[in-house]
Amino acid sequence: MKVGFVGAGKVGFSLGKMFELAGKSVTGYYSRSPHSAEEAADFTHSKFYSDINELINESDTIFLTVPDDAIEGVWDEIRTYDITDKLICHCSGSLSSEVFSDIEKTGSYGFSIHPLLAISDRYQSYRYLPQALFTIEGNNRKTDDICAFMKECGINIELIDKNVKTRYHAAAVMCSNLVVALIDSAQDELRACGFRDENLGRAVEPLISGNIKNVFASGTVNALTGPVERNDLGTVAKHLDILEGTDRDIYKILSNKLISIAKIKHDDCDYSGMEKLLED
Image (tube, rainbow, N blue to C red; front, top):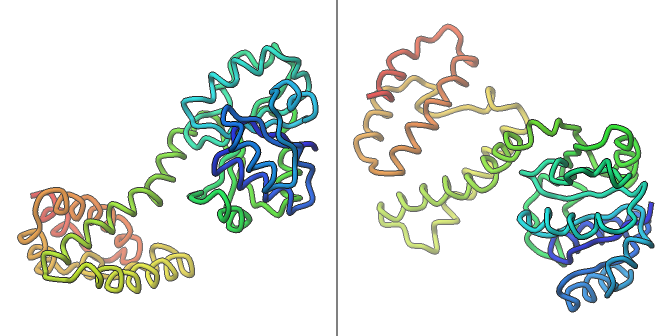
């Protein structure tokens, strides 16, 4: 499989390097920013293309590693060329393969291939890609081919349906972006306690990293601790009295979720008082 890239940002750099290191054939890069395409080609020991049609002709799989709002426009351009039997892939978490409108008329096959990883650095993120789970959704006729290719690169995959992409992406946001907001809220409260900024990270990192390790070692139910799990109404009431605004809303919403977990862990415990407290 010869893989070419339209778009030379962080995702294009990272995927291309991962494929190269796995011994796959990376044909090269085309981008509206020729300098970025040249850099990506140099980084992956591949070819810089100034002509998108040349890249298409020399590749049998084409990744559109462009921003989400640019995918449809790039597709409208490349569909005007001969892309018969080619695999056309994008890496958006929120968009499905249906963004490739009328792809069946071109004789090519569309896929969305998304790594569950925050790709933040074009020169370093490829190191972490093999640790990430990739979700794949697209044309059933070529699914086995693209899955085999990814597995040969050492990638763990999960097949999903195009109709769940929005829900899937929301879940990814919950465990990535929204965690940033949760940590920021906790640090705001620590500032209100008089913590110096330089100690905020030192304060929360051991709590977060230790908790995360427990969650993935034993599951969310067994890892759950704290006042909600203990059904400690007095402590939770004090927290609600002192917290304000968005931080209070976050505390209440997530504590309600914790109740559902706690009920599984302690199916003989009556959490109705805690539920009422959080409703008030």
